[in-house]
Every structure is written in C-alpha cells, then in structure tokens.
Image (cartoon, helix red, strand yellow):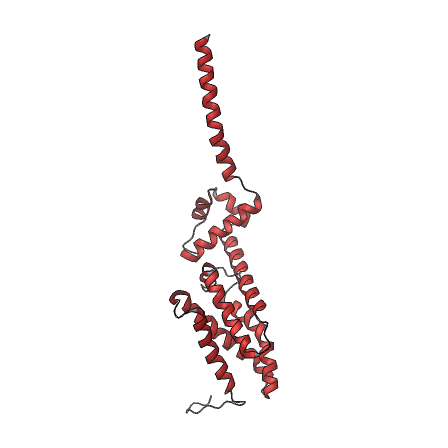
Length: 230
C-alpha cells in the first residue's frame, strides 16, 4: 500500500511539474489572428530587406515565426501576398511622412521639409526603404519606387505650380519639375542609405542648395547652347 502510494505520489509530482512548462510554452506561442499577421509582416519585412523577394522563402518565414507553412498561406495566400502588403504599408508610411511634413509657406522651407521627410524615413525605416528601392518582382503589384516617386511628386507639384505662376512661368510645366526635384532627392537618399555621410542635416542643406539656387536662377524659356537642337 505504502509503496503504491509512494509511486502514485511520485507520478503525480512528475505530472504537476510538467504542466507549468507546457502551460508556459503554450502561452508563449499562442497569438490572436491579428498578432500572428503582424508577426509575419515584421519577419517578412526583415527578410525581404536583407535577401530580396527571390532570396526569401515561405519556409524561412514560417520557421522564424515558429509556425507551419500553411499558416503563412492562410494569412497572405503565399509569399507574393505577404510582399505586396509589406510594400503597400511602406509606401503609405513614406507618403504620410512627406505629406505631413509640408507645412511651411515659403517654397525654400518646403523643399527642406520634403528632403528631411525622405531622409527621416530612410533613417527610421531602413528596411522598408531597402525594399522599396528594389524592382518589384510581382507584375500585378502597383508598388514600385518609380510609382512612389510619382506619388510624392504629385504632392509638391501644386506648390511649384503656384510658385511658377507668381514668377510668370508656365504652371503647366510644374509636374515635370516636381518629378525632377523629387527624383533628385530620392536618388540622393538611395545613395545616403549606405553612405550615411555627411550627416542628415548637411545632406538636406546641400540638396536644397542645388534645388533652390537652380530655381532661383531659372530661365523662363531655357535654351540649348550646344550643336544639338532636337
């Protein structure tokens, strides 16, 4: 009897000692659907930035999340769906930062704000910018660096249009100049992504120096001085 009791007590003790570990393990991995989706997005974002779309696999995403491949498919339909959501979120983040930064009334300060907005994004959301500057591998995706630049340029062309009108220039040319200015800032930012020198404020100052003094001396009807005329 006593031996039997001792055995039962030992078995009971082992079971009870196992339960807390299993409970902690279950609590540690259990997530709501929204939490799991956010986790997969963050993991995908990191991997896409480091390895690109082709270099990232569903298996790796699932392994880092501690789930099976079907869970990734359940949330996003596959790697393409996950990538598209990541790109869309990064584009909206950058556009929001640029749009909300354009608050000053003076055109030169607006140029400074736009330059800082892009450089701030690169500094704070480095992985996101690395993803955006890659060519989109998904034909049906509208998310690309070129389309992003176009969207940002649209935000500033009205400002340029008013400035052109005040100076007696053709405001219909504002969209082209907006593309040129935003493209200059964006490509410089792409270079600064890895160089990180000089400091952000100095990069912004040089960008505005080129843009502003170029605009300040703008000819209403620019002419070519070389032999080629068409």
